[in-house]
Length: 265
Ligand SMILES: [Zn+2]
Image (cartoon, rainbow, N blue to C red; front, side):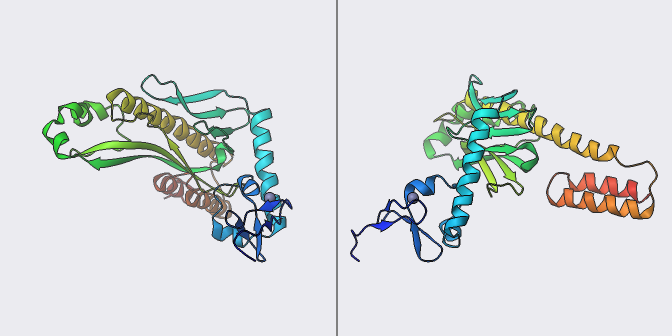
């Protein structure tokens, strides 16, 4: 076979270009169109271990996810970034307990329960010589009061400037097999005060909202536990708590506090 011979896509039966195809299990190939219908998070290494059936199952899950979002998702809560706080970042459907990354044109739908942890991440670079000389244009970024409303969020170092702001969401086992959603909350091309303020305010709101959800999940777990338990029940409760800790739903401090309480320490 020469370079220009056409291979057949094992999934749809269409032509899979000799160069722009994707290898799957059993020395078979898949076309680009089919690849785009799978979870984007799948690496080429993972694809090589997947057979036709498995890939079709993955495509079905992705399609069902899209259809749920298009037909059943109802926005009840929205989070915005940007200088005018008009750029959508996350949409939530509180009745269903769903959320999507609103910065994507074709977002995936996740459960709020899928979230194991989240954090705001700055990407920065060192100031160049000109910027160092004329630091005035960034003074606001290093003023103590700039961060006073956001003590939980990361700060920019004095000799750096912000080039990107992300809200990373880590996911627990979800049908799509995605482990992380990286949301760009810095819409500006340049480090401008209003854009950075908008992004900080947005991340702060997300921290408050998601932290509150997590606390409520923790409390509802609490409600089920009687005030005085037998040792066996305490151990069972501890086991559950430990799995919550491992999956990141509760923090080490929260776990330690409950552990003390359950063991009557
Ligand atoms: Zn195909």
